Length: 361
Ligand code: KG4
Ligand code: ZN
Image (cartoon, rainbow, N blue to C red; front, side, top):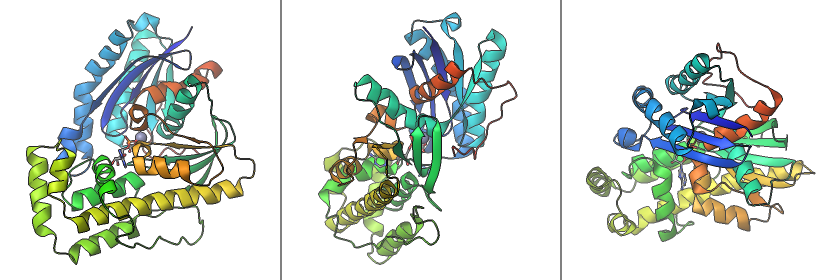
């Protein structure tokens, strides 16, 4: 029996989890920083690392306690080494190194994006319906929009990536512009069913060079222009006030401060992002003759419109999504990605560095 304690701190969640033998989750703790960053409409790196410093000790302690273990019951300690915010990565990785140094428990460095892929692999195994390889993996979050070919778990080839904003970043920026607070993905997801997805026509970016690359900045600019030409200042101000007083506003409250044209805008924006993501996945699948499944993970994989569209799309592939809890950043996925490394004895030295731009392939 082997147990790994993992730490994730690459962005604005401080998380720790313990898993046993690849798939048995003994504990998972996630401390989110939404209240800290909410008023800025996005993650403020300096505040994020300060919050990680505050949270790291209690979060790791709680993960151990909930698993009913002490350090003597842990066989390896894993931490995200990149990609992510430098100051945030540093807190989790340095803490893991310190524990490793003090206890002699070996250290494993994990790529955050591979973590998102392993969240899906772990849950599929638990359901008794494992992901079949070769697979196509679409990782869509606040920091990443990447399309990989995965010949098997651990063997990746980058097929395309965003040249500007990540998909989640586009959700966050559009929500901020319209006064919907942070993070923007969940609120746009909830509002989109109340608008006409074809109410506002956006043209999708045509990529020169690698046609599997993504671009969301043109769409964002189109939204900015639409807002500028529709005199929305008053309703935006009303929503900002609503989010200040009740950040957890319910759908009725949101609808009450969102006239139909803005609902249509939100629905059309989300529809266009989903189109862009699935169109790329479909062309990648066509090129990869032997592909057997599509894995979609990362915070944006929570999106109900994306889930429905991917399942209905005629990709001819089984589509695998993580549960909502494992879509956004967590440490279970880091522990899951650490297990193959643990079995291979692929440990990291105590000199391992945080790598904000670490690539997966
Ligand atoms: O994976 P994640 O927690 O952090 C990163 O690695 O970036 O993803 C966070 C991102 C945010 O941009 C958030 O707006 C987006 O995921 N997100 C969503 C939804 N839930 C979270 N985007 C669209 N629809 C959602 N339901
Ligand atoms: Zn992530």
